[in-house]
Length: 361
Image (cartoon, rainbow, N blue to C red; front, side, top):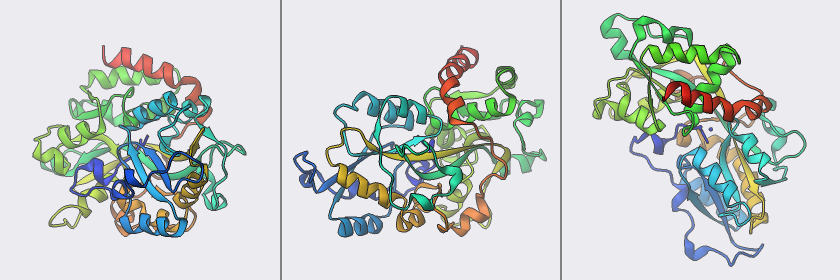
């Protein structure tokens, strides 16, 4: 979501690496002609997929898959824009709704309506009839809390953005830099959606006065600063509140050994902002035919069913399976913050600039 905005097994540092990067090799690359037998996916570092699922695509399509991971979502999008005349690959995955306008305004993608697009749930579709991007997954940026911390102190965890500025939660929250991190930007947009153009800055002044800590990345916030995550426990993190995802608690259960009966972390449902992550066929792609086949695959039933437990996001295809652990430990927010992409496009850069001046200086 770049999600993203998004939680993945790889980013969680819970001992499971994505399988896709191992599929295909430089020896399989074509000469750059349109009939190349290698299709290259450019993504942020949080990509992951099951080897057998990718192998099935390779067998059925005749294309080998090569993956280029290129930093976090914001970095990856910016680099893709800078190299659009001579792109690194054929398909870009990982631009979310917080950065989508930047990619579209810079002509990053060429139109293609992926097969199966009619099965994408309507609320996740974007770009009208131009079809420059294909929705692939969705997730909610939310404040997570360390259950043990609050239980030991008899303190009720926060439930809303309003709660976070209350004295009882002073010096407890860590968030990511909105200028460099997809969840950090999602959290900023969530506050703008909640408090409006005239109120979000006042909210952040209160949050700053209440001791919010800002770090550069999700990895640092969640796996080093947050006391509730497996990584944070090892790093002796001392912040029991962190900006992460609604799907983080299931990961803490699934990859724990032994598995706990309940998730050690919870989600403050009233703090959530919904992200949607997209893929698109890069303009000037050398293997456009292979890129189109890959986009068809990304919203196909096999990949959509496989994706949740690899990247810890929700599928966007109608009827796709939702893992039981997601339903039990990480359900989607009931009423997440949202914002029209056009409003994000009109305000994002100025909001980030104002936020930086207000919070970091």
